[in-house]
Image (cartoon, rainbow, N blue to C red):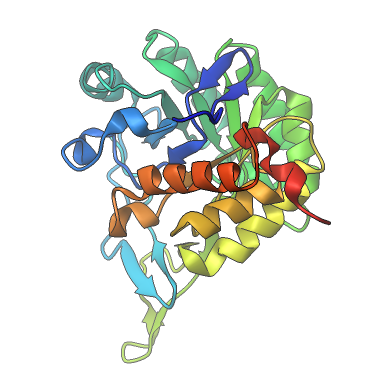
Length: 305
């Protein structure tokens, strides 16, 4: 686009621009194919892929809250075998990088999923969802324990040469410690942030709305949290940080890029305006031109701490 360099390098591969669409908000891409020009996306992060098919949680799975939504999807997906046989052939035709979001309940499950996915050359890389509970360690999410994060990342690093992006949970005391552990384990980049824990109670029934009690809060309500976490994490590590959380317009995206993000992902905003990624990309270019920049990567240097 224009004279602005939008590309971002992660490991030895390059994304064409800095605006991607977040896992779980864009399906497998085909759902949006008639609504948007997929070639304009910097990356398409797929729905989570697990070793076995998952039906997901009981209904309801989604509820609107002030300035956001809470989801309790339960990682519903077709499983890695059907992902390879049914989804990969469709995505092979998309003119944008495809990054598989990978999830599991044990270290072995994560490893097996990526070993299976290594059979295809359609995938640009992997985004590892570490918000999953480790059933072998009492249900504590991988992403809340730096030792588990470093070990899991190291195991996955050893079985792939593709870019490995670790998606960080904000539900920790100090995300910088977790980020450093992922980098130490061999992560090539970090996604920052996943959803925040939230709950809605039905006051008439006097019980939580979701069968699982809590869910993941996303949307504008968490944008200040995401920006703050991105600012902190980007200064704690030397690898790229991909910022996300509540990006509903150009100014939101710019805040992440100024805070230190090398790229961004749009999630909940896709439900309201499927063309938002393209609009944001154009807005970022205008902002760069207004500030005499020829490279989006230089935006972070403009922030006056």
